Length: 255
Image (cartoon, rainbow, N blue to C red):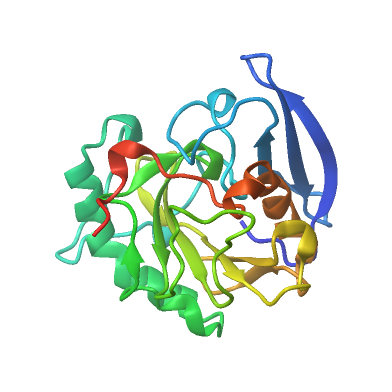
């Protein structure tokens, strides 16, 4: 899934069946191979990071193809043996999704830690959702949202009262593949940097880490263009310090 050389942007617009004009980014590997859609942003309807149709919600971050082709060597297994299966992601019960996530979490973090970024072990952090939920805007993956321990309030952040410097929000992901198996997905992160770092994007630094720890892109560094679109999508909620809401049915109750 990861290109060995920087990807080349080839298209930026498309329409959905809902006739809503979307901004989108497609990347083709420099070798001219597969085309991957990694960004899509709804310019019409406000909303949250949801499992609903793309045409009805705005985007939280970069997205990836809805399903991937994978061989058995990358498909995940239960600790007791046998491949983990998700035959119909849309009908998977929350408790079943949570069981799969529990089995994979340590493996996911082990992979992300290979990136060398200190914040990749997010397991002790506050988790905002009660169970993994499908985010169409992230390639129909099951995702989870965590935030490190800061004095800021995710639910009340505004443009005038933003999250404090040092706030880190991460979203890990699990992919359902065409065969019905399960594969670990990318980790998406955003970190609040000092004033002036990226004023157009609320001074958030975005990064995308692949399951094997490869850094796909980070704001101001390697692969900057690949994650720039994440900041552009979040301009829609600049009044909330560029933070999208989570779907209510999966939101963990505040303490």
